[in-house]
Amino acid sequence: MGESAKVEIGGKGTDYAVRSGTVGPDVIDIRKLYANTGAFTFDPGFTSTASCESEITYIDGDQGILLHRGYPIDQLAEHSSFMEVSYLLLNGELPSKSELETFTHTISRHTMVHEQLTTFYRGFRRDAHPMAIMCGVVGALSAFYHDSTDIADPHQRMVASHRLIAKMPTIAAMAYKYSIGQPFLYPRNDLSYTGNFLRMTFGVPAEEYVVDPVIEDAMDKIFILHADHEQNASTSTVRLAGSSGANPFACIAAGIACLWGPAHGGANEAALNMLREIGTPDRIPEYIARAKNKDDPFRLMGFGHRVYKNFDPRAKVLSKAASDVLDRLGISDPVLDTARELERIALSDPYFIDKKLYPNVDFYSGVILSAIGFPTTMFTVLFALARTVGWVAQWNEMISDPEQKIGRPRQLYTGAAQRDYVAVDKR
Image 1: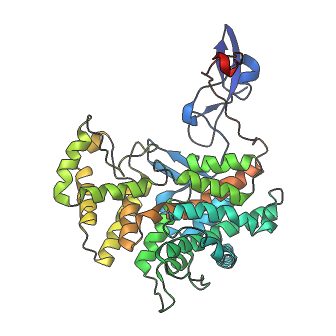
Image 2: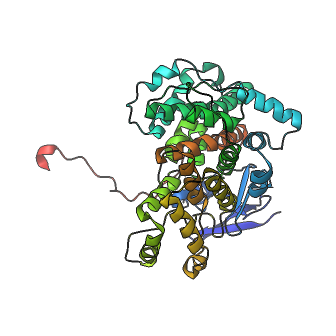
Image 3: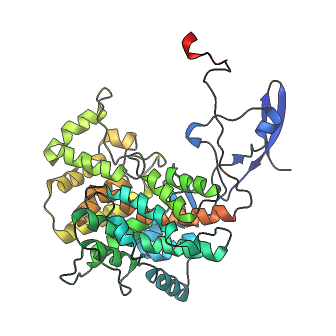
């Protein structure tokens, strides 16, 4: 008999099994709590509730650890590629050379989108936010690819997964091109996943686009570092939508909608906007003083993390990538100078150190993407592009989980008790 926990209500106690994962905290299995006691748990945001069992990603926020299928994120970012990490998340193991070649070939052959989708884009206003376009276009994929929406068929699930991962860069690049009035570029099968995206985004038909290996490497690292992050808000949204049996394209569109929020995927955009507000390095002391003032509403964006109570392991990787990109491009920009100086101060100021307000992945990714030439409106789109592989892996795992049920959170009702209707002329 394993360890158990007792919950006592009204003098009546009931034992509940304690389950242990590979690593991390134990969980109390309370699935029979309501049946046994007539009571629910109250957990806003589900921050103390395990909503599922998963083998994909593990985070230890106190220690600054992020593992994908057991592999540390810094090792993957340093030695792997986004395609290899995508295979790992989907299949559970790193691919052999031939498996990686086959997977990469499959993804590259799925990068084109249905030609009628180009007319779909024209239905949006020219100044539409790219995330609004992403929500609409990805949701509409189910109208174009009927042959991969049967979630009970493992083959169709695999085809849908490959299509989503492959087409997301094309859809994202088209959203950008549409917003600036340039023609769409078709993908090319001879380029890497990331190189193809850069060309479709920044290339033009009038001349050949040459992929810069430093930029390509930095973008690939950004994609790896955003590929999955356990049961966050958007991933939970994908799982919740999928629990109803919705098709995979609708589920990923739901995840994109959730990611759009400034408290989630929009954090890197907010961090760069903060740097632009500060403007120049000489104004940093003024803003740091404001950040330390409890009565001032100003907050430094891009510092600290809800999960990581230590240094964000992803930030360490991007810190070097940011330096490489800025050095490569030789950009003279006071906003980027401000970012570098703010980073230096934050890593040495006792206030930041004591409160563990280290620069996080959003701080560095915003700096890198801005230097490459992406407008802030595209930042969350790039996040969605990378996170699609995590969403797809989590969705596949959920569909295959025999214990998974349709999501149905409970509530603590605090409204009016039952009362009788009163006719309008007597109120």
